[in-house]
Image (cartoon, rainbow, N blue to C red; front, side, top):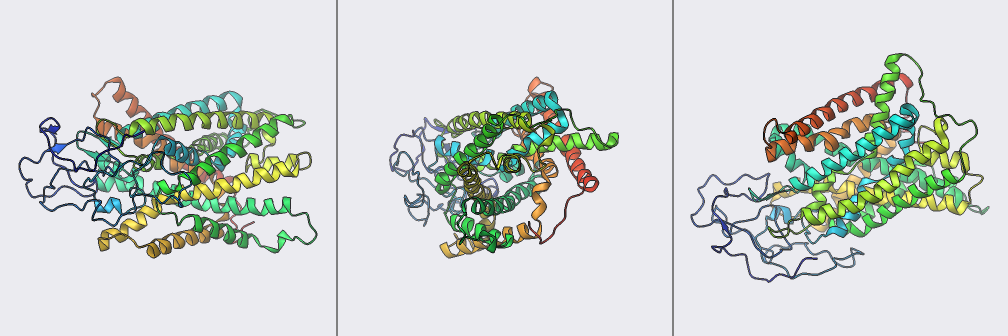
Length: 539
């Protein structure tokens, strides 16, 4: 819990000056002015925790001589209204009058910096576990028991380590900068042009692609839910077509998307996190309790030529990689926290991640192992949710099936919000950079409504997106497993040929090689096995 701070501005003092630090600019995307800085304006660090830390720990007077607007003269939405967030900050600290970068104060990811370890845990849980985890047992049908468990365990450890790297790369005390977005860190590590080439497409693909998948899954499950609960003769859920169900669900996510910033959706993330834990646990518990299916087999599927089997194995690895998501959001989540030299943000962030990933491990491992034990090679390609309705719709109470469906719907609604936030931030930043002012409430509403209906159009046009799990896993893999290792080498600069240097180079190169192989395997499997390319024909 952060202590309350006074309202006096940060001032330079001999005890807090760092004369060897380089000049600072406002943000990683805006380099420092070419004008020589005025003398005796050194970097100062407050020894008291602050609640509104900008991306840059600013000098008392900027090098340009112009006074950066403070929170008292910026029309900011930093403090989230209580009626917008069910879970307001556990402590309301006094506002410290520090100099903020207006561009960050106006964008939805960084306009509120009163987050804490609880919020971090909520967001990480909601972002880190979702409907894609239900496909894990399908990978085991190719890899078998031994290699399935080994591969899944190693991947879990690997992605948890890269999360640790990202959390510790968020702040650079030497330069006084916070990388509040994954793209900012990529540009700082690889250069502006190369960083944009490497990370831009993957990040947008994860953000927009996940939102589209949420609409497809949420709408389809909504239809199933009404078919389960609608037993009255006067109730006809079939009156709505699949496209109309997509539209109904899209309207729901658009309404929720009007919450202003990342901190304001902490309550929604909490609902989404417990919904994901709830339906995953319910599905594997029912599957195990009902015992194994008759004539179940655990022999790995080996069909076709050696080339076909090789690509099947790679596709299974892509499914496992696809199960771990959220690395493209960890820096954004950490950016919502206050920071200071004495109380860096990585401490509460890592505490939140440890708690959330303990729950994720307790959920995913039983889901993968228990699901494969119950269904073996008979599990449907679409995963555990389909298996539950196919094999147990007659021997499980409708109330349990309805509860499972409504939890999936809640999780899809919540996941859309957190995965859509980076895109909201990017779209609003275009307006901010052009007009040098914040979006008004009606402009923000138009942007988010347009994004929601764009995702609806893509969902209707490409409803088979969920069948490309292996291919999507290959695209997302560098963001999760490879890029953080290279970023650590470029920014932290470990000693050449040291064990840490070899470790990160090895993990980074291995991640990039796997990404290329998984993308190739995903394309091959789609071409060889075929996917029902039902454009504009959702089922």
